[in-house]
Length: 103
Image (tube, rainbow, N blue to C red):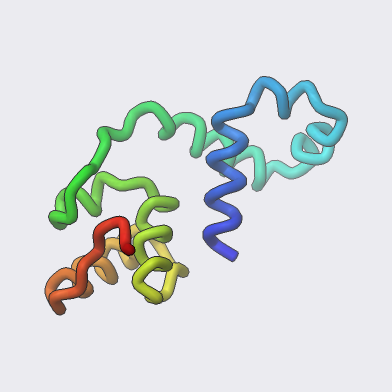
């Protein structure tokens, strides 16, 4: 599930020191693909400006995990590239759907 993967990446970025000290980290080190994704997530973690609204430019600044959460709350497909997720949210706004925090 894409949202589970995003949540795991966010958890790793937040708790990286503890995770690298754990016994199970050796399994992560054996997978170059996972390591590459984790490094990309960590390098992007502090560089994004917060996006608080629902304008198209805000969607483009959001993290993929945030985009997926918004789509999930609307019952829309959460799979695809960031560009696809942004387009899906833009279409929802154009169609008059609320893409706020839900409720």
